[in-house]
Picture 1: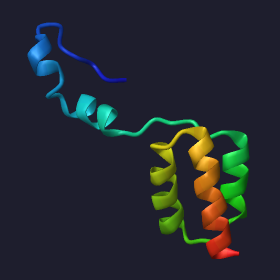
Picture 2: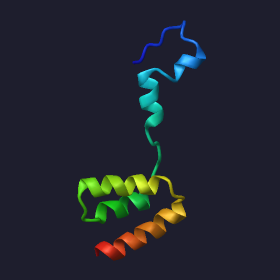
Picture 3: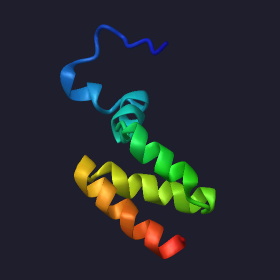
Length: 75
């Protein structure tokens, strides 16, 4: 658990390293369909990580289209 001193003002709040790490993360939920399709791809963990980052910024509809194109390339 992160303990934050009560005397820290709002300006300094975003400068706390734990807070910076939290906000630097990408939080997204991929649908079950997208996750299942990702599992079927035979690609390296590094490429999978890149692909997930790219999918994170797309709408669900565009994620499906993107995956369709990836499937055509890899299968």
